[in-house]
Length: 424
Ligand SMILES: [Zn+2]
Image (cartoon, rainbow, N blue to C red; front, top):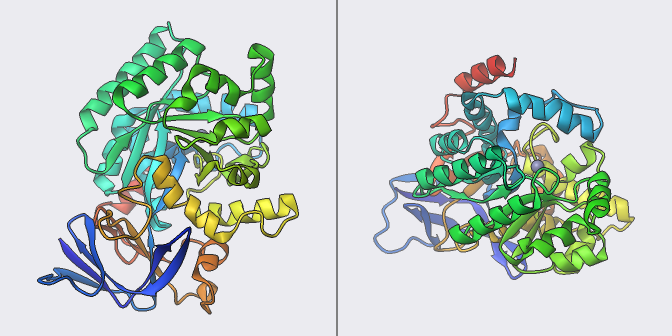
């Protein structure tokens, strides 16, 4: 479809930062065709009047477990170990595949409502997550969470299933994949190497959790003499494109190992605080040239999938923690939620900024909201003032997937019915 967004302000890339410019946006098919004036012969089939609106690149959630939306507010205010091993894992074991579909759909609704157009998911049901993403129209990067020893039937089955589902869905225009070994404490050395070989063979990024809790780091050092980051490095995991969730308990040497162009750290500030794991050294990582992007983690440990919340936190907590008002800026937070995320996922040519030729993955925000007035600095407003409720309309791949906060592709009431019933 040919689509025109008129009278809007657009948040455009300018060097390392941003410029807000009054520019119409012309979209043809899935891509941005022009900014400013209409290309010759362009005939809009639909025009969105976006006066008093700001168009931003769709946000990119680089680490979540979308199906966990079903567990929202069911495991709170308990220690990390109890949260994972006694609350979350037993629930995961009782889930049937259809639960994963409806949990994923609930998460997708929340993400679209708050301007997220792409999410990087680690879960147990690739097919149901892929189906939910395809039905809703959101862009997704999907990895089957893997655990095993390297010579157990369960681990081998999970890896086999992952490859089968990738084969089944790989032609879908909005879906890409990762190989996602859960963590070194749930994956044996041989299994991690198998995952790495699979990632290399398929030319896919790895997605893993490392150095989330102090306990995990202590145990790994006892077992191997190495930190989780150094251990991953010793196995070759840091030699390929990899997204590493958390990196909360990392030292200087770890940070040095993480500073490579193929490695991306996904910081999840709300989850790290909620589970009592602490603050990732994001300012130090940024200063050392580590690519840091932003995630929500699952709704069982956040308990929302709202990246506006995370952008606020990632600036505020590090300013507070470091007693340094310039520790992480609003523009850095917005980069983490857009361009850096696209780079981490290997999608920098396609998404992450509003540029001619890129995919039209866009969120349109209503600026006539009290928290967005007056408009001195809209980048600051996005990180410090916005809460996601400003997002009115969302496009993915040039298609409208939310318009005036309604979903053309999702039966909202059915989702609420299913998740209520299944959560019980
Ligand atoms: Zn996680």
